[in-house]
Image (cartoon, rainbow, N blue to C red; front, top):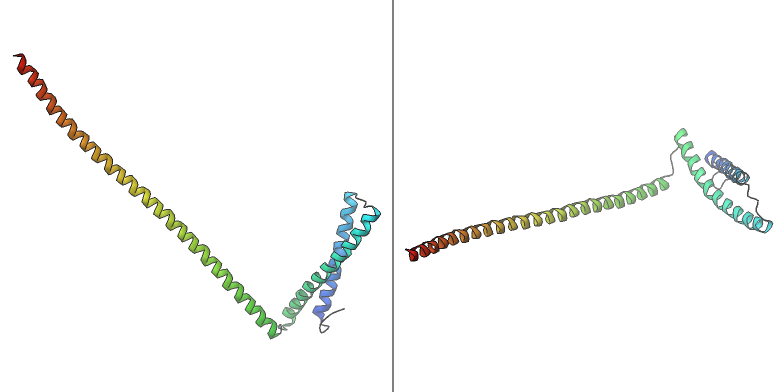
Length: 167
C-alpha cells in the first residue's frame, strides 16, 4: 500500500488519497445525473477510458500530496523532523525563490522610479517651455508697446505738420 518505510504518514496519505478518489467519482456521477446526460455506448467507452486514465493520474498525484501532508502532520505531532537532506533541499529551494522574488521586486521598484523620473523630466520640459513662451510673450508686449509709443510720437508730429502748413 505504501512506497516508503510503511510509516503512519504513508498509510494516512494512502487512505486520504483513496477517499479523495471516491469523492471525485461521486461528484462526477452526481453531476452527470443532474445534467441528465446519457452518453452513447461508443462515446461511453471512450469517456470511460479517458476517465480511468485521468483518475489514475490524479490519484497518483493526490496520493503523493496526501502522503506528504500526512507525513508532515504526523511529524509535527510527534516532533519527528524531516530528514536533513529534504530540509536542505527545501532551504535551497526557498532561498532560490526568495532571491528571484527579491530581484523581481527590485526590478519593479526600479521601473517605478524610472517611470517617475521620465514623467518628472517631461513635466520639467513642459514647465520650461511654458516659461519660455511667457518670456517671449512679455518681450513681444514690450516691443509692441515701444512701437506704439514711437507711432504716437510720429502721429503727433504729422498732426503738427498738417496744422503748420494750414496756418
